[in-house]
Length: 301
Image: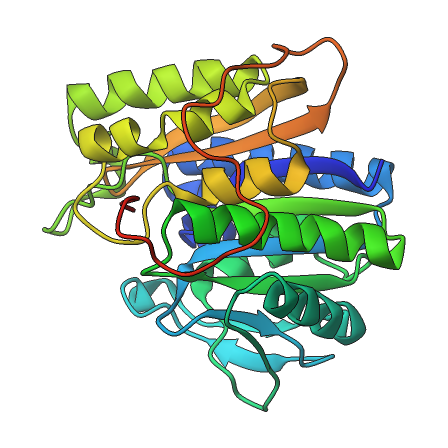
């Protein structure tokens, strides 16, 4: 199998920087640790991160600096402290993915310069899941204006690049579930999911994922977006991307390692592994796209 494992993780820095401040944040840290051990056991050649916390406006950006190194401070939670990092990026793969994305009609570019501002979500995911840089990685942005068709083609371009290079890869999306942050400072001990409705939808999403129903969650992403996320253009498209990259079906073994609120949002660590005993196939509710031909004004984000 070209993609041996996939997953969904929160990108907020609390499980990395201060897990001891709240039992839920500590649970998320333990979830990251369990997922890290599963990744190490799977021994992938490549770890791909798609981060909703790295927005791009024109096309799709792919990190290609072989060894990005800096000290990062989160723009919202700077009081939590600095995060020094140094990563090992598979630059050759980044360029190959870019080329295949362009061949499929996408606007894609690599970025590689000292001090490029890698986002908090990618940093948190890589430091907790790949702390010793044992697995070469690559990071991709989330285009804020891409519709479903463009996002599906981006996921398929990744799969094609993985197959073309003969890699065994793990693919991770950095996202929250419900996304309503508290706008006033709260005591960490008082953290909770922002509303009962958010909690109900989070639990339904986690149920689907625990049953390995990845494509079902992708098909439902627009409705989920309407129900539990504030209005923003970077929404549940990572589920479109993850399903397109891993395989658009429900044949996965799902494991929810952790779920807890972080400043009102729904934060989770979820692992998906290809399995013949998962939820099976499904009916497509929308077109299955192989090549992007531009906006057609019939699909909405």
